[in-house]
Length: 217
Image 1 (cartoon, rainbow, N blue to C red):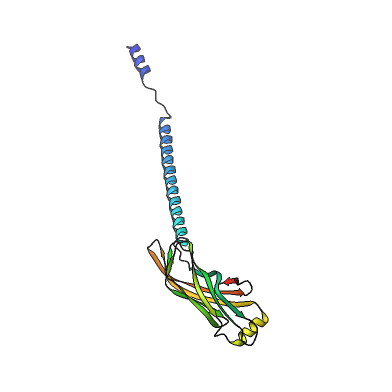
Image 2: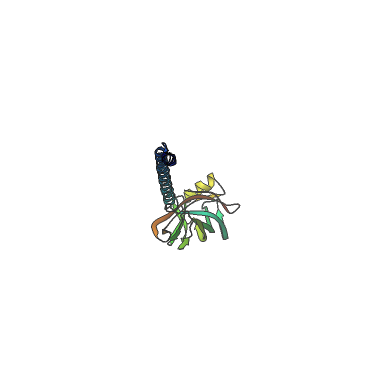
C-alpha cells in the first residue's frame, strides 16, 4: 500500500509556476500587435486622405482654373497694291495687308468665341479694320487664322504724317485693338464667359514691306 501511495504521489502532474506569467505576456503581446495594426491602418487612411486632398487641390488649381484667352497679331504680309508717299505736301499710304492672328487658349477646355472686329490705328486715327469670324479654340492650343485689311491714311491729319515721315522715314507705326467674347467649357460641365483682348503695337518697314517690332499686352 505504501508503494502504491508513493507511485500515485510520483505520478501527480508538475505545476509550472511561470505558466500564468507566460499567458499574460502573450496576451499583452497580442494586444500590442493589434494596437500597432490599428495605428498602421489609421496611418494608411490618413495618408490616403491627404493624397486625395492634394489631388483635388492640384486639380482645382490647374485643370479646373479658368484662364483668360489671348488674342494677338502673329505676322503679316502685303498683297497687291502698296503705295507710300513720304515726301511732298500730301504724304500718304495705301496698302492691303494679310495679317495672321491667333487666339491662344491655355484652358483645359475649349473656348468658343463670337464674331469680333480688329481695328488698326495710326496714332489716334483708325486706318483699317477686319472681321474676326466666330470659331472655337481647342483646349491648350492656339487657333490661327488670316484676316485681310485695307490700310489707308485718308483720314489721318497731314501734320501727323509729315511729322512721322520726317522723324522716322521708311516706317509706319500701327496699333491694333480687338475684343472677342466667348465661353470657356471645361469637361463640358463647367462654363464661364471670357473675353480675349488685343492691344498690340507694330511697325511697317516700307522698304522691305514687312511687319516688325511686335509688342502685345
